[in-house]
Image 1 (cartoon, helix red, strand yellow):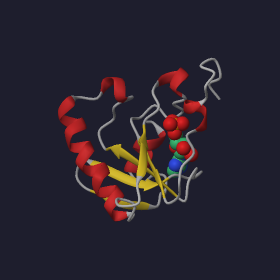
Image 2 (cartoon, rainbow, N blue to C red; image 1 turned 90 degrees about the vertical axis):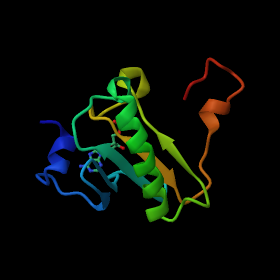
Image 3 (cartoon, helix red, strand yellow; image 1 turned 180 degrees about the vertical axis):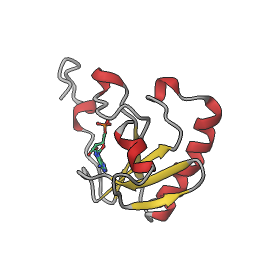
Length: 118
Ligand code: AMP
């Protein structure tokens, strides 16, 4: 069973901020921003590459509710999902990072040299 499936089953503790029958959201253990929440489906999906359009539709509403719950809806936030090795995905269970609470940097993606990625 993967790490996030164990979190869903409460075998591993987490700081849950929102949960329904299909999705769960909890604090990232190693936050990269003042607000850093992980939103995941309860049924195991490896990554964004495998997610169905119907699950994505419901996931979108759930993520919007995470932003409301964390009071970052109006100030703005970022949603990221890493996919596979080059995408930097460490946990092979679909998850969306919801980041906010401060003005977030965007340096590496705005670098004028397209060969500089980090
Ligand atoms: P990724 O690199 O996109 O796969 O993101 C995995 C995320 O899971 C990282 O940001 C980790 O800090 C986070 N993480 C790993 N283990 C836990 C845990 N037990 N509870 C909460 N977040 C975790």
